[in-house]
Length: 244
Image 1 (cartoon, one colour):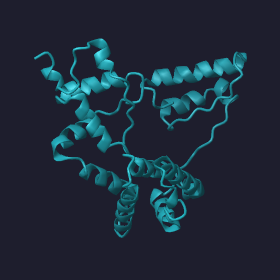
Image 2 (cartoon, helix red, strand yellow):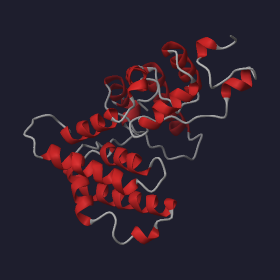
Image 3 (cartoon, one colour):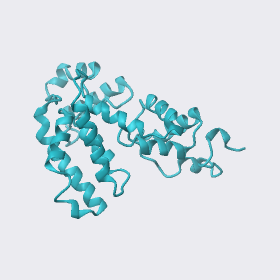
Image 4 (cartoon, one colour):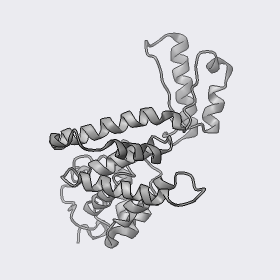
């Protein structure tokens, strides 16, 4: 719910769903997931909504370690099956690898999700080395004495940023700064073209940046949306050079 860009729209969606339930106009059972933003919380506290809803808080806690472990085992199994490396099924990852990843997650599901994305992409035979590099980061970070929350996750993101080529690093930093719009929404291509124009990069360079940041951002490319507008657009050129 909190991924909608407008707070008023979020509240309106909740009210529409509640009205549908009250009028029995649909046979759906609704599950709404959101961060505890004030306007969303206050909407759910309205009497006519509270009476027909049930709220469950999902805290970040080590109590979720069991679910995180299952999630990791399933994710690595999928990686092995997709790459057709079934010979690794019984030996990779090890129990110690999974235990280290669960400990580093500190109850936060976003942590193992990012690790699995990083290890699985691009799809090649280097998945073993990528996991090893992550484990080394967590091992070295674990030795540090710090009060910083999710220190190991921060170290993982720094590791990803350090692998970005110098030629696209500045553009990647700007794109991250302006990535408050979700790139996998219906309007993602408009935001991509805007960013490309703003930072004077081609769409292909944007994809190179995304490939470096795939574990941190989500972007689903459509099939040549720009050429459907103008078949003369050259996606290999910088946007400000089009037509020259």
